[in-house]
Image 1 (cartoon, one colour):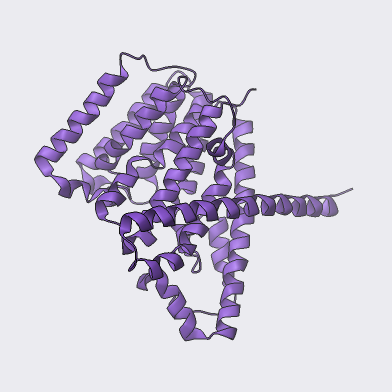
Image 2 (cartoon, one colour):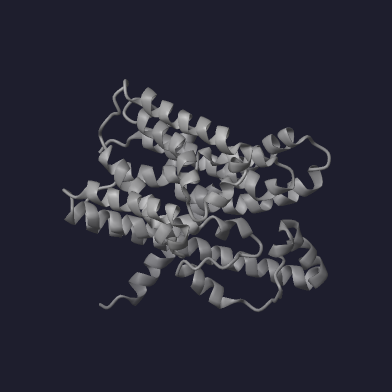
Length: 363
């Protein structure tokens, strides 16, 4: 099957948007205006769930095999992260001492200073990571802060393929259930459940909607009307609630509220409008990122942690808009380098697992 470069292009663009979000929301807390941080959420993780829907199918075996490969790749990465974090602590404690280590971690903010810094490996953390309980990685706090997406992706992909396989004539009903639950949770917030239910309800709905658009094209005469509705809602919200409502946008993301759903609708609509219209004929930087999106997602957590140590000394000397451009560029560069390294690490990890499989297999 010929690869759809538009999907790769959109994934690459969405990945860069995630890098920008984590640039301005993490280390950017020191210098980036709240308005800019809110605007960054226009292009966010709902795009990834929609792109998964556009490429989804009803083949359960193929989907579960793909998820198994992703789980093993994820486990290889977090194993590497665990030992990197541990070896750094051993080095820091023995060379610089406990006070220096606490000062180092305070760069991320006071709440990210570990209560106890030990040179004894915390194996329970590695086990928790394997099972998608994202306890903090002290040396790279952004990594686990961005992994909530992965757990939801596993859940909705399994549910999604089961729906596509066994209820192909009832997909619209499931979309209605997902969006209906999202509406109920928001209209009656005291019913909003804790855990993953709210996330899965919304993002599974987006996944299934995107699947319904697979291979189709939004008519040209329709999308100006759709954009018009979104702009009217935007004008209404500004008129009645003012700018203060949008300054609370980040709080509407975890768990996703209607305000965040509306904000994400602009990028989702654009994705569907350009689908089967924008033709990407050749590979480029964005398609390369899209084709290696999982490694860039891993890498941006590490790079977004490292840029703290550039932000802190520079924030007093550069205007915020220059600094954010510089830091974003550095973050992309670091993510590219780290992603390439992680891809090679993944290859080595798979080779080791294959070697162990052959050595332990019954004759």
